[in-house]
Amino acid sequence: MSGGTASNAGMSRIHTHGESHLVSRIGWMRAAVLGANDGIVSTASLIVGVAAAGSGKSAILIAGGAGLVAGALSMAAGEYVSVSSQSDTEKADLAREAQELLDNPEAEHHELAGIYMMRGLTPDLAAQVATQLMARDALGAHARDELGISEITTARPIQAAWTSAATFAVGAAAPLIIVGVTPSNLTIPLVSLTSLVFLAALGAAGARAGGAGLVRPVARVVFWGAVALAVTAGIGKVFGIVA
Image (cartoon, rainbow, N blue to C red):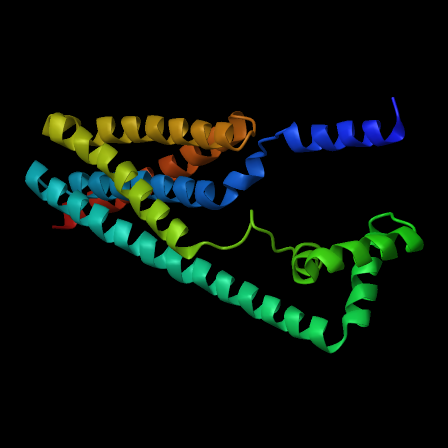
C-alpha cells in the first residue's frame, strides 16, 4: 500500500469511527439529578414533618403541593442565576482572550506552546502544534487549552433551569402520590420507605448514566435522604406535642 493510500485510509477511519463519551452529559445530568433528588427529599421531608405534627391528609397534600410548586420555581431560578454567572464569567474570559490575541499574538503563541510542552511535547513540536491550531481557530485553541472552556462543558443557563425545575416536579410528585393513595395512619412509614426507594433508584440511574459504580452513589443519596426524613419527623413531632 502506498503512503498516500495509507494516509487516506487512516483519515477515513478517523472520520467514520464514532465514539460516545459520557462527559457530554455532564451539564444536563447534574441539573437533572440535583432537581429530582431535591424534589424527593424536600417534599417527602415536608410531608413527613407535617404528618408527624398530627395534620390531616388534606393539610399534608396542600403543604406538599405548595412545596412542589415553590421548589420547582426555586430550582429553576437558582440554577438559572448560578449557571448564568458561570456563563458571564466564561464570556468575559473569552472576550479578554480575544483582545490579547489581537494585541500580542506572538506572546499568546508562546503561551499556548508552553502549555503543550508541559503536557509532554518537545519545544519544536509544541510550537508547530500551536501554530497550526491558532491558524485554524486561535480563540478556540486558547479557550480549550488555556481556559478549559469547550462546547461540552460550557454553561447553558436555560437548559439547567428547565431541567432542574422539571425533574424537581417529577421527584416531588412521587411522595405526593403516595400520600393520596395511602391511609392516614400509614403516611409517615410508607412515604419514608418509598422515598428512600425512589432515591436509591435515582442514585442508580444517575450513576449508570454517568458510567460510574452503583454502590457509593446509591448509599450517598439514601443516607442523606434518611437523615432529612428523620430530622423533619422529629421536628414535626415536637411541634405537634407543643401545639
